[in-house]
Amino acid sequence: MDPSDASVNPDDAPALPSAARRRLLLGSTAAGLSGMAPVAVEAQQASDVAAASGAEVTSTKGKAVTILFDGKRCIHARYCVLGAPAVFLANVKGPWIKPDGDSVENVLHTIRQCPSGALTYRRHDGGPEEKPPPVNLVRMRENGPLAIHADMDLKGKGRLQRATLCRCGASKTKPYCDGAHKDVKFAASGEAQPGPDMKPLPRRDGVLRIEPLPDGPYSVSGNMEVVTGTGATIARLTQTILCRCGASKNKPFCDGSHVAAGFKAPA
Image (tube, rainbow, N blue to C red; front, side, top):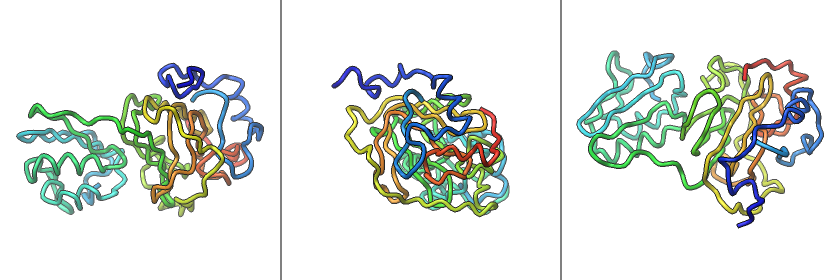
């Protein structure tokens, strides 16, 4: 393993240098920002329930597991109500999570399918908690957000393992997706051709640091594979910048279009 490779020690990944920040925010197309090749910078980085939308984090305790739900992160992907319908009750008023409605194994499996991380769990039966994936994935959802599955350090939000990040620019709960891409008719393919960055990484896991830049893209540092909605890998990277304004012609990568588009979003 090459000790000089940034992917070896993702915990030591430096912050994006101020000069690089300025180039991004000024819309520079240097360092390969134009064209269709994936961009790499020099450094750093559910349900159908109507009442769920905008809800605070709630917890429902069962015999073996407590299920936590963050309504502000829910994108209504419906993995829960389809995977464990006796646990996650669709189209009901009042309590809609019944932790003891199915086997513990299926309850936990179903929660782990939630791409937004709106559903998480805490075990009190002595079993293991959810572990980070063996491969950090950045997945493009068709006409929708970026679904991240990784040992993720999202600036301002703490340590997460699953999240769906807005890439249409319209979400009111940035950096999370709130489904606004449907309202603005955001069009962005979940498919793409592999770029030049396909060399195997020495490591595929580790901390993935994500920082939303002011009025600009996501700066991402750490080992990652960028994959299509159907699972094909298009890039293997240790640093990149990902579009969150919705205007890039090089999606999912930033090409500086946020400047011309007048994109505004806090860090």
